[in-house]
Length: 368
Image 1 (cartoon, rainbow, N blue to C red):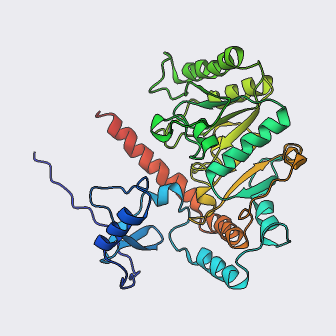
Image 2: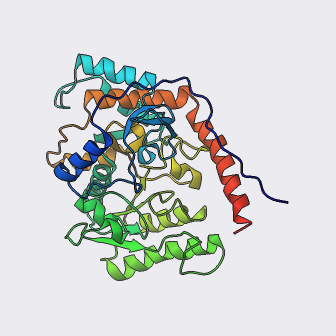
Image 3: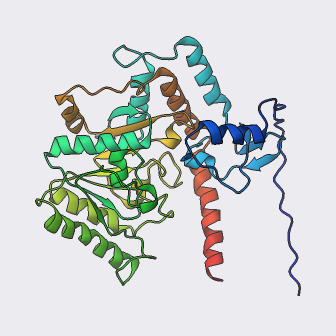
């Protein structure tokens, strides 16, 4: 029998994009080449000019519709231009665009309170920043202040940002420049069972990978560490994770050696894993810090670090201030995002659609 190719079509969409009247695609490319840093790259041999978005769809300058599976690099958690989020942004921008946290504004503590309601008991104090890099920088700083230790253990193949400090935490040579940064950071073996140097079952590989942290502490540090940082599921590293026992064992080793545990939830947080609101919950652990960005703002620059009050107080030793952290407009976006995730059932949608996708991938694995 001859296989017949099926022509796939997107479902109907009643949204009609506006007529685009801006610079042409060629003009945009020319301006980028002349006036923007060449490190800012585009995807595809023929880069797309995206001028409008509506929920799960993007539109180019011709009005052609695309299904956005990239979600702004795992950022658009509620859909492009979700009406509730747009409404919250518009209302706040028309009232007050910016006032720093040296003044009182309700949105700042309201979002912190709402985040606390989503966390395990005790993780209820939040510092707002603008990105995941800043969030991870700040978590490491607080861990070092609280413990009095300097060394940090991260994972090979992990990604934690592009600032000098976060670049040190990151373990991909393609994302690291030959400049000083991220001192006192050591990288342990990833528990990914598919590419591990260790043999055995996934659980055995996880145990051996956790023991690598202990080896680093014994031979590459003074015997105590400030923190262990890991993504519950590595994102840039290929959407991989260890067996369920890995984080439990890694956290136990970290705490037994003076360190605090940081869960980088920039890509896994806010219901994306379906069964749980936070990625770490899938592995039965509770971190000392939760860092987040991307999905919390649905595209608005917003990041955060949530921790315990006793740890948070360590930052009060000196003045620490973030000009845009806690901005009323960004806080309004965050409040609306958390509402939409619940009201639109997006965590359950992630569970259902994610299961269908994983089941399909597992079926493909049988043939490769």
